[in-house]
Amino acid sequence: AQTVTQSQPEMSVQEAETVTLSCTYDTSESNYYLFWYKQPPSRQMILVIRQEAYKQQNATENRFSVNFQKAAKSFSLKISDSQLGDTAMYFCAFIPNNDMRFGAGTRLTVKP
Amino acid sequence: DTAVSQTPKYLVTQMGNDKSIKCEQNLGHDTMYWYKQDSKKFLKIMFSYNNKELIINETVPNRFSPKSPDKAHLNLHINSLELGDSAVYFCASSQATHTDTQYFGPGTRLTVL
Image 1: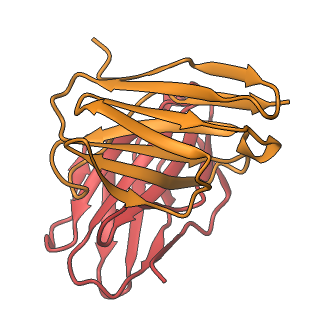
Image 2: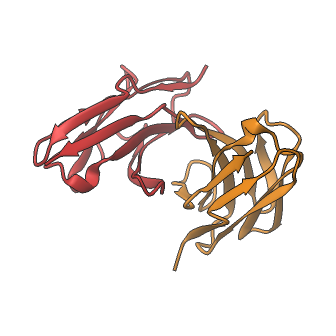
Image 3: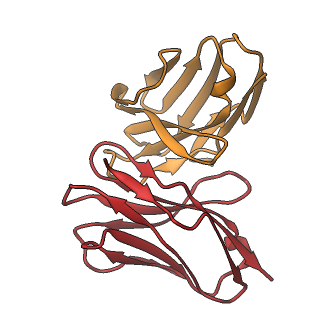
């Protein structure tokens, strides 16, 4: 089965600090695509970052970066200098073949 | 300038009714999708269309039928609504294939009474 697991249902972090959200997945495919999406209270799904499995270099996007460990099938998201606006549900997702599969989400709260 | 739009944003209806949710994208993308997000926030794909042709049809009841009049639109029709259909439905689009980044609409919260 091709699944995505986010083991942290909820996390909190102090403003300006760094937090890491974990994600593991299971697939027999050698090439696939990984994503982190953010869903704030407005409900909008917003792409945070994307990683192609064939690229060894970890993707970064401003304060957001990933730690992609292909052998371990791990794809964690690091948020640096957390801001109040980062409060949201964060979904890890991947596309192993024809469709995108999502994890159950991690609810992140940034505290002032 | 909304990239992916859905109407309505909220839909409240009685069991047994038939309803539709519309989706439009102005990104020039070839592929569109429908997802269902349940009360536990779990997101699951329902349908995928590429250039007006059905690509993915996950195991959803046949009461759900997607309609794509052109590649910029993918509407979702639901017949004989049931309580369990209550959820948030998201439309999304991607440039060409399923491996391209998907851009989501704002979601439609459907409540079946």
